[in-house]
Image 1: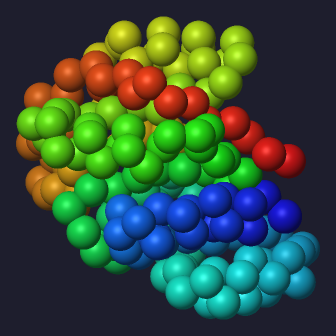
Image 2: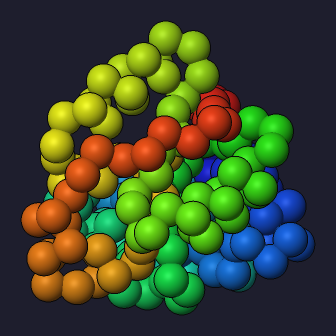
Length: 160
């Protein structure tokens, strides 16, 4: 299960004091109530908070940020995990970026697409981003001042 892989990979960050709280956006799964129940049980077992998806991805991320605790939000999709050294890289970014968004590109040629997308000025929320929580919970003024994110020197990969 993709969500289990992602939540499991965050345990190391929780042990290091970097990850304090996980919020899982539970998608509407028409015709698959047993799958939704499994995801809800997994989130509950790991102490993650559940947010039901509305169908508007950007609004769902904002809703999840309101439920999150802490000053920074790390955006991941189910199945995404980081490569070695991610804890130090994200800690360093949070301490030295001056509140600027960061991006952990995917491995392989997909990472090129992440880098190209990061060069365009956009307020779209994507997997691999790390940003101040206030960007998502505020009035949107911070996103209006969006600059392309800083590219972190680690990668993320998708497990399926």
